[in-house]
Amino acid sequence: MIKAIINGIFSMVIGLVSILLSPIDAMIATVLPDLSNAMTAVGNLFTLIGNGVGWVISMIGLNDTVLALIVAYYTFKLTVPLGLWMTKLAVKWYNAIKP
Image (cartoon, rainbow, N blue to C red; front, side, top):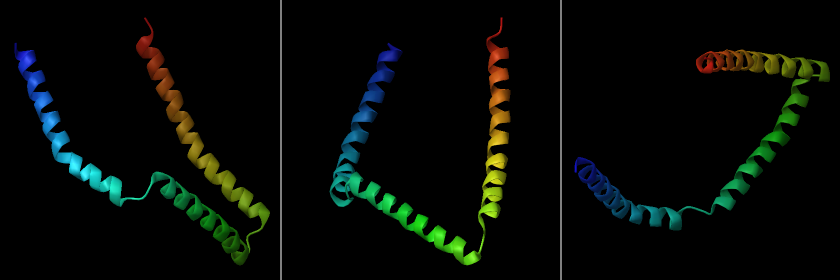
């Protein structure tokens, strides 16, 4: 009995929220551009940034060795803690399911 009442209340609230949000949803669908336009704009932005990065590096005067060392340092710095965390998580899961 109580479960039926709670389900009815949730159904009513979901229906009311749907009715209240449908004009906002329609407005968003008509006012905002298509998702493909947004993805094209993001791709164009990354292309522009990629073209600018090469120009900035050449203006600073960094050579290939320095760039390789910088990339190697940040790769190590960002992947080693993640690898340790994943190993600890795997050991914790193994200990949790071990009989």
